[in-house]
Image 1 (cartoon, rainbow, N blue to C red):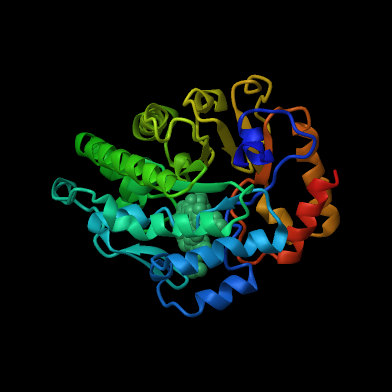
Image 2 (image 1 turned 30 degrees about the vertical axis):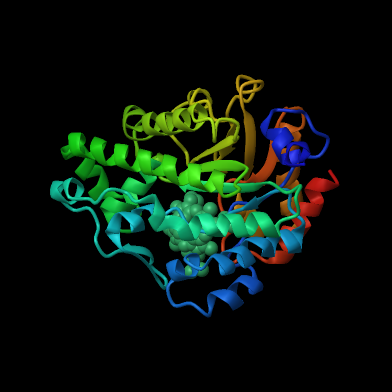
Length: 344
Ligand code: CP3
């Protein structure tokens, strides 16, 4: 039963002897098995549009490392792609939007979001759910409305998203409309993932760090709060635990706990926060710096123990990294880390 799995218990803030473990980007280029499949596709999103391949990729880290949770293999940029912004992944450049949001009219003339355009994602969810052992929970996910807006306006990745920040400052009203459209799309998208078999949902606010504290509430957290409220109010999704990952937001973590998410996924630099005020309110997931996985075993051990010591009395602690596994990490170190946490 899924309810008895350590991961779901932790999300319900139950104290556990050994924390459940999974890793952000547990399926990815660091695995030779992934690269073998990836080499058959020119465009990354074409691969995401193949539900059988997504299933195979999601299962790779589960089979190899016996992790406590699986995550849907897909990407957060499927929603902007469904809005007609034509997302491509260019080798060495990351995502590139062929139809980015450049002017007000680009938002005004956006088509209605059609959730059926993302049927390939829901099919991937149901394939993965069927392939997984029945006691391993499956995480569905989406990007936060702000993070999706940032990519859509910028037209891809960027160091500081200067165009986006300028655009929203000068076009606050229409930006609000865009963020609302994205919030509604995220809700239907996540609901369909739950209907297809997702047991947990994670929201990735990967560009939370771009905004000042006041702007963070206005452009990001307000919409995340609304999205979580919609999920918690719908009978189909009401009981699904929600994990919120926000990269270095300029607000206190307690403010994020008030979003009514069930779990806070901490970025690796968020290691001096006061966890006492979060206890009893929200589970915590994280937050080893993935860069330590490029160092010696002694360093990995020392840094992992620091984190395990910090959270050993925290009810509902889930071990994870503070951001995704990078392509240059040796899979043997993922195995080493997993064994280390389980034998602590
Ligand atoms: O195991 C998993 O976590 C796989 C599922 C997954 C992917 N992306 C696959 C992926 C998830 C949950 C994501 C989320 C995602 N995508 C986020 C949020 C998490 C974070 O990192 O902050 C973001 C910001 C994206 C957008 C994105 N996707 C970028 C910027 C890039 C290019 C940079 C890069 O890492 O390559 C991607 C591509 C991507 N998404 C890959 C994978 C496995 C690599 C693509 C390839 O093989 O060429």
